[in-house]
Image 1: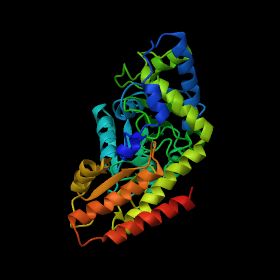
Image 2: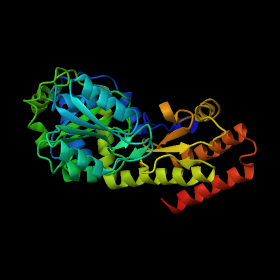
Image 3: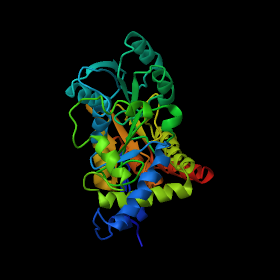
Image 4: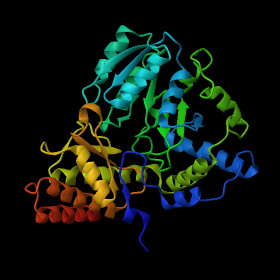
Length: 388
């Protein structure tokens, strides 16, 4: 029988291919969120998700997209007029800076060239000038550029300032590579269901350090739905404050069990392996890497100058049933982005390289021969077999 992934490959940086066990869980009949059956599931999930965050603190389960989780991190710890430093290296850094401005923060920005990672010394210099900065905002992975920022080094810098919180958008990072919240002294962390958790879009997961929790009551940004104090109280009673997202939480229970069985290290290894494969063999087809500090969760590839990345992406989808993403804003048409999270099988990686080669050949017949494409695919197969 042909599997779903043989017919269609979702290799975007999110949403991602769903694990077969997740699809089974999503197909179960609906149950009510105020029942003993669901109470047991919720209790397991609230405990189990801490292992992915690698924290002893509470993790809150919000029915919203990742951007809602980014907003929740902000409004629970800042007040209008607070100084906030935003690291902007792409579309999602821009979004978080705009959110902070919307809630009245006095926002300073460190603009980082697209494709590059922030220098922790620049953050340190800023905080030395303005030690009363309430929060530093940074993406662990800037999804629009596939850049991984040096979160551990940044945490070391920010943690030296007692009144400053380090808030990290790990939506395209948590569960894909190490981000131990407690060990690295991250004060606020947000993840999204549709990324390394291999679930449908619709939930954000957030957690705060004790340092950040000390600001819950003094922060006076408007908040109602995203007031985690309500959620904290409800969770302590074995419930969610608002209606629970039963379908996704039941599937999350399955995912956390899968992660527990294989271990985080194996999960990180598998995603790193896919990233390495993509980086090695896409370059053999003629692409170059866009990110100078590439993330394991997503790879951005610079397309040949004679081609349009948007057309490459469209051709892959329409002719080969493979979905990847293109570039945004200044990178539109110049790059393609390939995700490495979710349920991805080796044959999908080989199919991607084969079809990418065919697409390049279609748009520029002189760029590759059929023999060259075949050689890349065969070498890729050998590499996967020797790197299990």
